[in-house]
Image (tube, rainbow, N blue to C red; front, side):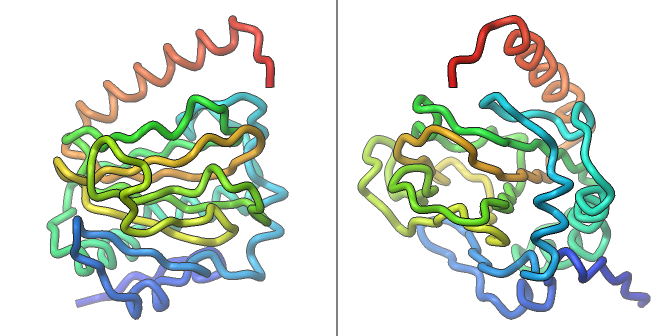
Amino acid sequence: MTTIAADDRFIDLALFERTPLVLAPFDHIIVPGFVPAEARAALAADYPKIDRPGSFPVGDLRFGPAFRSFLDAIEGPAMRGAFARKFGIDLDGRPTMVTVRGRAQLKDGSIHTDTASKLITVLVYMNEAWEAPGGRLRLLRSADNLDDVVTEVPPAAGTLLAFRVSKNSYHGHAPASGPRRVVQLNWVESEAVVRRERLRHGISARVKRLLPFRG
């Protein structure tokens, strides 16, 4: 069997492999330093310029070559294989979907689970520092209590958080406003999901462009 290596300038799959999966209350993994420190300046420089809150499909954004290489790595076969092994899930033939955020607004962060058509959610944070009390993603035991916390993850540069999407994969964060960079990767059930989400995000992005933003 031939192993296809990822671009290890931008992601540390060996560190991911060494980090144990946490099983309760739902499968998740947190990997500080998943993006190597020496790559972060180039990624910060090449990160898409996003001046509004919300998630934007990566295909609608402009960015530099380092960020393109990072995307190639996280959507590549080595990453897919590592996640399939870690979570014990067959990801062969499952499409990927990537969205990017650049800013948070105060109404973000309400408790939710991701849609069932998403199999695994991966968040990679790109903020050089995070001092604000809000904006730190909390994995939760319940659907109605933001303080019923399993763990809290500061959105610091290079940190990866991933979880298996399930009916109880509750998460949210306290309010925050301002720059908050995060790349979200999902493996999803089918190409139909990708098409539907692209349409939904596309409509949302067009509405945001028409409305004034008061950041």
